[in-house]
Every structure is written in structure tokens, then in C-alpha cells.
Length: 249
Length: 180
Figure (cartoon, each protein chain N blue to C red):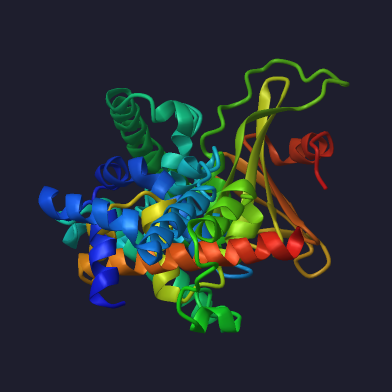
């Protein structure tokens, strides 16, 4: 870029003082080369701006969830109290308040989770949960206990909130929450198999399907293409019947 | 690690949209821009304690670009270096001797904008120009913020943006002619 072009770039950026800018205005009326450069610059800028696209609606929640996991806080438990990302952006003060509430709840949930792991048969042994499974369980801790409402035999499951995508244990996992009557469950889908945690029970094949109990959660996994892991706060014996009514692949 | 994640999220989530703009353009083939945004935030969180005094937007952009490069290295691909036609080696060309001829490039570009073509042509620019255009024109960074993110003088950013815009306009005009 020669000095002429550098001056032109400075002119286009509004860097020149008023006197120099005036000289450039006059120069442009006479210099075909510079006039063409100005028009191409404006056209290029306008073209590049076509590429602007708003962030996907669930991205803020996904990022926040990932950071909370990295922080070691099971704040995913607060996801249902958290408004959608777009709504959060509307009020900084309101968002802060919600984050404070989320933080307080997260601490409580963390204590509960710690106690659960400690009280599980096997103690620390039970805490050795593969990262992908731990991420699903951490997310599912937010599920409220079943309300006691009967599950109508033919009622369709209703999706709660938006899907959340996380990366854990090198796996990309899409998490969806479903409500069926008074019971909620998380369905996690991944292109890679979910590893069996210690103390899990193989249902078929070497890790193709397994079930496990983690705290108050029952987990049922069917590895394949894709692999699916269902987690719900119900007795293990009820999970299979619940999973059968969820929209699995 | 160990920084208060709520403080971190309060400081960085407002910039999610601009990071997303950068990630969409920086992600190489086979890279998911959403994964890149998440990786950016995780890296930023890990380094948050030592970077609070900087311009947060510029800091996030620098992390995003580095994350894209390291992911690309892992995939043995280089997202910012796409072989371009010989046109890129040539200086900006004249398209006529008079003002009508000069208007051709700009008019063709403005008349026929579509995101897919723009994205393809942007991918043909040399990396330094492409990065500057993405930061300034797509994501909306100021030249000073872009310079901070890239670690170069502001004047360099302005020059790269100017040259990149002109080449982009010419490539789009070419695309308009060849497809029209």
C-alpha cells in the first residue's frame, strides 16, 4: 500500500483533520483512481455486513452451562429458573439477580450432590463417573421430584425449555428435558457411546446398554448410532417404562 | 481457574453476539461455530483472573481466533488459508477509464448480495485481510479493538480492511458476472 492509499484509508476511517479531509473531498472529484477505490471500499464493507447473523437462541445458555461445569458448580440445576438467553439480555439488573439466585441454588445443589455421592454404596468409588455421564447427571439434578400426578396412558410428552448442547468427555451431547404427567426426564443424545460408570449394570452386550443409579437419579443408556442416555428422578424399575414413552431415536 | 464464574459470565456474556460473528467466520471446515464459541469462553474463563483490565471484546476475539487456529491444527487444516485464484495476487484492477466503468464493481456487488456468495468470496481473501474484515465489518469491532485483538498497529488494521474490502468487492463482481 503506497502513501496515497494510506492517506485514502485514513480518510475513509475519518482519521484526517478537517482541512485534510476537505482537500481529499476535492481530490476525489478529480481523481478517478481514488474515486473507484472509495466506491469499492464501500461496496466491500456493505457486502461483509450481509454476513452478520444473530447468535442462536440457546447459545448463551450452553456457554453458561459449560462455564458452570468448568467451575465445578452444578448450576445446571438452575437452568429452569434461568430465562431464555434473549430475555436475559433485556435487563442487566434482572439478569444479575437471577444469576445470584442461581448461584445460591447451585451451592445448595452442590452440597446435596456431594452428600449423595458420599452416601452411595461404595463412597468414592461411586463418584468415579465418566465426564459425559456426569454432565448429563449434573444437568438432570435440576429435575424436580415427581409431583405424584398420574401419567395418563396416552398423553404425549411435552418438551421443557430449549435443547442445550454441551461438550463433555470429548463428546458433543444434546440435552432435552421432557415432561410426562408429573414426571420429568432428561434425554441426552450423542454421536459417541456413553461410557459405563463404575457400579453400572450392563443390560445387553459389552456396554451397549446399561443402567445405573446415581443419587436420586436413575440412568438408562442405550449405546448405538446415536447413543441415548435417559436420566430421571424415579425408581430404577420405573425408568424403562418412562423411557418407552419418550421420543427416543 | 477459580475465578468467580458469575462475575466472568456477567462480564463476557454481553459480548456473545460479537464472539459468535467471529466464530462463524473463523471456524474452519468441519468446525462447529457453536463449539468454537464454547471453547472460547472456557479458555477465557481459565484466563479470566489475569485479564480483567483489558478490553473484554478484543480479548475474547483474540481467544476465539487462537482457538480456531489450534482446533484447525488439530484437524490438520488451516481455516484462514484457502487457496485463491490468481486475482488475489494482482493489485486492485481498473474496470474502465471513466466514472461509469468505475461504478461497475460497486453496483454489481450491491445489486447481487447474498450471504453464501459473500462468504465464499471472503474465504478467498488472504488471511490478514479476512480477519480484519471479519472483526471490523462483520462483528463490528472498532479498528482500535481489532488492533488490540491482533496485536498490531491500528493503521495496519485500517490498511488491511481497505484492501480487503476492495478485493472482496472485485471478487463479488466477478461472481456476479460469472453467475449472471
